[in-house]
Image (cartoon, rainbow, N blue to C red; front, side, top):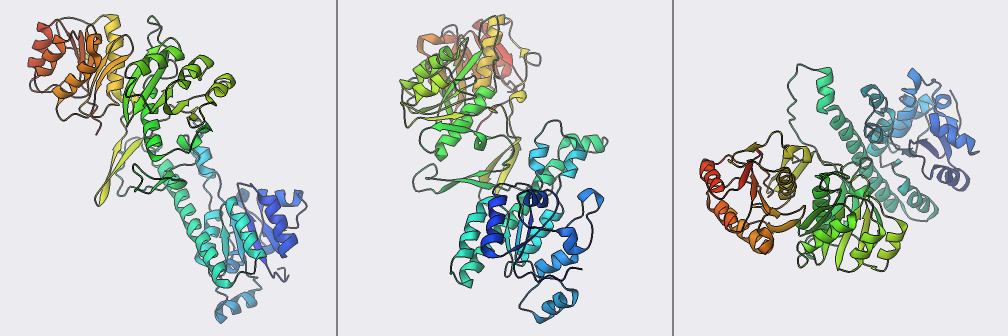
Amino acid sequence: MPSQDFSSLALLSVSDKTGLIPFAQALVQEHGFQLLSSGGTAKALSEAGIPVTPVSTHTGAPEILGGRVKTLHPRIHGGILARLERSDDQEDLDSLGIPPITLVVVNFYPFEETVAQASVSLAEATEQIDIGGPTLVRAAAKNYAHVTVLTDPAQYPQYLQLLSSARGEPERLAFRFECARCAFKQVLAYDRAIANYLARPELIQQLQPQSDPPTEGTFQLQGIPRQTLRYGENPHQAATWYVVDAAAPGWHKAKQLQGKELSYNNLLDLEAARAIIAEFGPGQGDPELGAQAVAAVVKHNNPCGVALRPSLAAAFSAAFAADSVSAFGGIVALNQTLDRETAHLLVEPFLECVVAPDCTLEAAELLSVKKNLRVLLLPDWQVEPAQTIRTLAGGFLVQDADLPQGSGTQQSWRVVTERQPTREEWAELEFAWKVCKHVKSNAIVIAKQGQTVGIGAGQMNRVGAVEIALKQAGSEASGAVLASDGFFPFADSVEVAAQSGIRAIIQPGGSIRDPDSIAAANAADIVMICTGIRHFLH
């Protein structure tokens, strides 16, 4: 067993090697540390010419089980967990020749990055479950009175600054405590990611095909702070943006090309706009109608206008024209690469944000004249949350997200009227139905030729929503189609729609008065489709 005198001993074992080499060099050259390490970290340090003692040399025990067991040894954990103010702990260290370890630098195997890959197997994912790393971190964090634990490369500069300063023990203890607090949060997030992966229904079904879906006793929610926002929905409300899974796709992976910092309301509206275009896919539409590009303009979480067109510029023009008054200061989402022609149109009105999968250099240059316009690129714009969460006094509600595939298909919908829809009407109704799903209830959407022409949102009664949508549509309601997020409890809404020239209606159905609404549609020669699916959005 080595009998070296380790005056300042650090254990380094990191998967993310960002900043490792300069940090380790500073520890050794400027502060006299001796380093312990193993595996890839030890190799990286040695190749950089930094003196390092292998953990196996320090413990006298070789790495075994293909590297699964490296640091799980009393000479390591005794050095970390020793309470140096206690004579009995010090006697144990002295009798066993265990030097105290004062610094532990660890981050974990990239489990979340691994399971984010679609092709990863359960066996491959299991190998990325770190055992030694979390054990080291928990031990060091528990003994923060004597040990500093660093779990993030962003902590390295502050630690080195603290070593170089003449600050007293109270400030150093406060730093160690903060690092310990962060460390336990890292362990919690890591364990949660593993638990969530192992709870995936496809894995359970694969290994336990006869079992019922598991019922979870608790729901765990862990967020990583992404950004402190200027304020929340209003200036008097504080707000923070948290990320659930830093490795997975999401808004935290968006690239902001220009513009002011994102606000709380920006983020909510951006997500609402993204969810709308996600209904249509990257280039979805009716080939015979030539509809390929989709644009959505959102204000206060509701769409002002949505349009399908052969080109992106035409789609934005139509979406903006659908309600140009409400679109003032709106959020725009596009489902294709932002090109020069579209950028030229975006420069003219006042908009808060624009998001697209990509952007050409010419388009970016054109948009740069609008210094305050936030322009974001989100390549993974079709990724959907699996669940939605809403708070209430004393708790919260969790539900499965109302995903695009939950909208149903034409094959599952029922034509309940005498007149059958034409091919064009089918396409128009499907478009209106997809948009209606993203309008606050009670919701009515009137659409014509792949463009919304009237939207009634958030009304306390359905006929009120119909009247608002028809008023906005004006003469464009004649020959248009209408979508309703819920059934019609009375025939009055259908009768009002018929008076304005609506030619087809899509709605969930399911009311005890469905026959009344169907009869009203038949009397007006209106097509009516019942989807059997409701899309309330509260």
